[in-house]
Image (cartoon, rainbow, N blue to C red; front, side, top):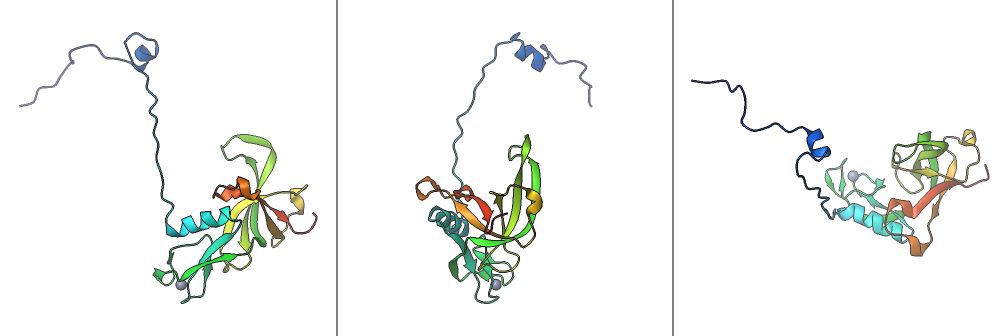
Length: 172
Ligand SMILES: [Zn+2]
């Protein structure tokens, strides 16, 4: 036996009733704090950045040097054999001229975002970063040589922004 409920007791509340103060309400902004473990490989990468080094991991079976480092070689299905610094120079693999900032707001002066193949890393191991010290983005070429511009050591915190951007190795 089922009986359809036509109406519930009490009065239905709308969100506008709360907004307009028609019913008592409490606002609470919780102070939520959390930590996130970066893991073995990424922790080494981030510690390396603090020291002004770009760390990769290597696998002796396939010979690859992976950047950012992995703890596990996804080609060989085995843990990596160690960690090593690669150079902070490389070549532009691809790039984008973006009129949208990191917070999705529109910007008048574009930011230049590139995938950079680092010297010493295996093929296809590019990292995504900003390009800087380029007056005219139309002068950017695929394969153009670039070098990391680091924050001063005392300002580094172990984040990817410890590298400010990559700049051309020759005047553009
Ligand atoms: Zn491997």
